Length: 108
Image (tube, rainbow, N blue to C red; front, side, top):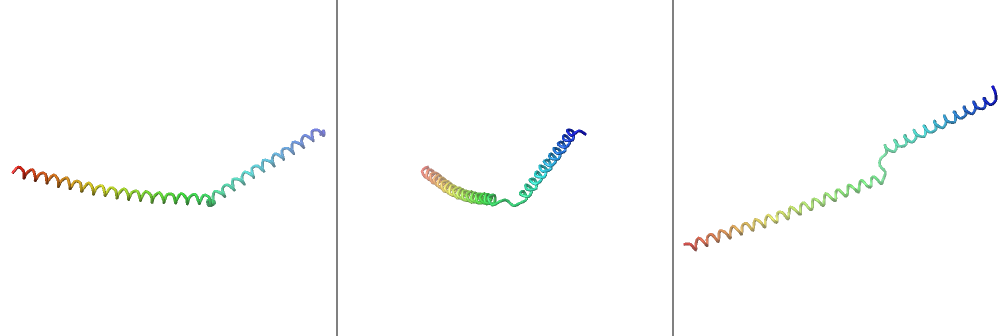
């Protein structure tokens, strides 16, 4: 075989081997990254995430307390209004019965 053909064959084999090594390295690196991502996904959340969750929990508890206070305040105000309306109704009824008795007495 001529030496030029031998050189071409050797270069092709070296290039093929280099490509094969490169592809193997890329696939291995890809699988390592996937394994790392799976490992990180299985871990507990980091401290920042925990603190954010705790802060949201505190805010929800504060919101619950605030709404409870407003609800109690509204209920109390409603009871006062009902009491006042009841007193006004009693006054009106008493006033109407007094007027009725006075007008009935004036007719006699």
